[in-house]
Image (cartoon, rainbow, N blue to C red; front, side):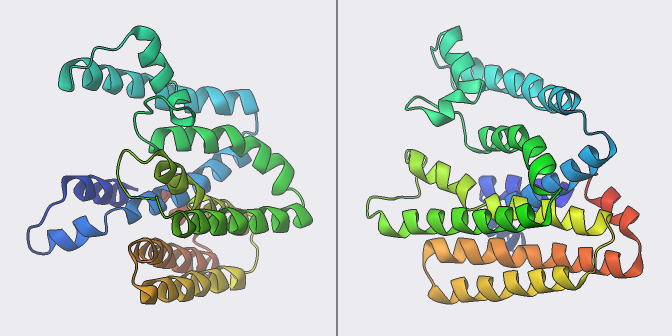
Length: 253
């Protein structure tokens, strides 16, 4: 998890020093690692205590106090914006992300949406084999829709002013989140690791295919997908050797 955070920070600072520039240029893959590991850790946490209200309370306390403090300091001191308390609360409640107003970044609102939905996913999808298949298919659909929106919208840009792009960032990472969810289910319920190896090779193959298309979006998609290959290999090896507890600790469970 720590390496994922470092990668994202380096990406936003755009470091161009030798060697570091390689990490910086592809640091956005840290978001995919974080999405995968978050879902993995959430599944493990819910499997130990499935009290929904306690789950929401813990996540709220982990996110919003720090988010509000940083948001306050950045808004009024770093950027020195003249915004009302109402506007501030609208933005940093994450509601601004889903409206035409300012949204203060895409990642925290996206995580909040996923955390809110997680208990439902856990109790309704992962408890039944047929629903797990449905959930997997739906994440594939979300991925394809996000991809389609980017390539079919001639006005789509990759700038901070393009709100649709911020929503697509969440949309095409939904499969990554679900794969972390599914991987935790496989490991903690001692399922056969064959499905993990298949998932790893599928991510690698699709990632290479996207990279060969050589467009801005497909290169981003390819590195995101291929970056998950390492996680899947680690998960499969942990399952095969029976050392899942170590993997859970590494993944922040």
